[in-house]
Length: 371
Image 1: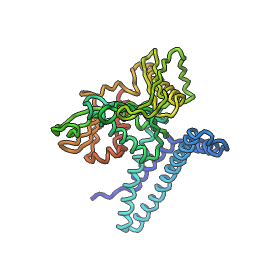
Image 2: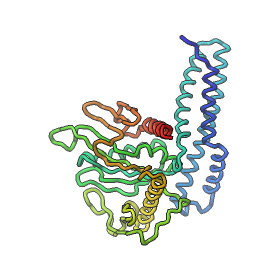
Image 3: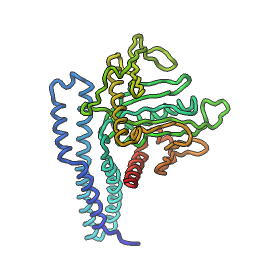
Image 4: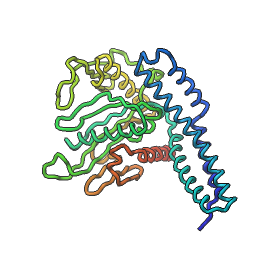
């Protein structure tokens, strides 16, 4: 059995770590923490609870990111000492401990390295995710609901705040569509690889004959607009309709016309919002999502690729990017990256980090291949 070259392994670890430190830009991250700490300490911060939550959340994530990078540096230093002890003492137990820690550090660094691949123009942004049921009737609507829970559980696992903006319920069960924000650094960069058509194969719980059913849902991910983007929309280009919010089965959950449907006349883009309590809040939320979609469209036009970020998603046969098979066997497989797992329950419970990491690496490979 070949002897592991500890010095060479350590050099490789430090090279990877140095690239992560360079991309993370610790001086910039530290300055950001100082700025957010000042904002968080402002006396009137909680006069605006929504803004206060954003500031404290961003501060917490920035502090966590800094500590994670610094802790990894200390961990590599400790591993070097352990390796030296194993070599000098020629002790097999110490050597095995060093090997185990080496494998653990390599795995942790691989996870951290994913962040270095998120260097797109909007990757640092919050994300706006829309899930729409596609072909498959009531099973497709139920599948859209399952995907919503999957992403909400994923966000919960990471401590990312989520805000549901609009929900359209299907008549029998599930969802026609749902739009929500994920408010966390790099939420868009991570979730952007989830955009596309998802396919579910299972024994339909809605079929009294117990037949197997294939259904589809489309996931669209766009970056959240920021004040600095300056997407101005003239009032003359917007048509606003108001209506009463409704819950499952059409039951009224609001006695006033608080829901808002906003149509951008030049492009035909339609955004509906009904989950806020007032018409003013829904109008503001709708305008923000409309601006985000126009931002995506503008970038796509500049790149001469229609909807480059959100994608042209049909939610039907022939263009699916991931399959969730519950019968006759259990498997979730990404058709782009070939990454697959057999624990479907864990995936639907939010364990999708490996799929996201594989998608980010696959996207970088595609970019390099066409560069």
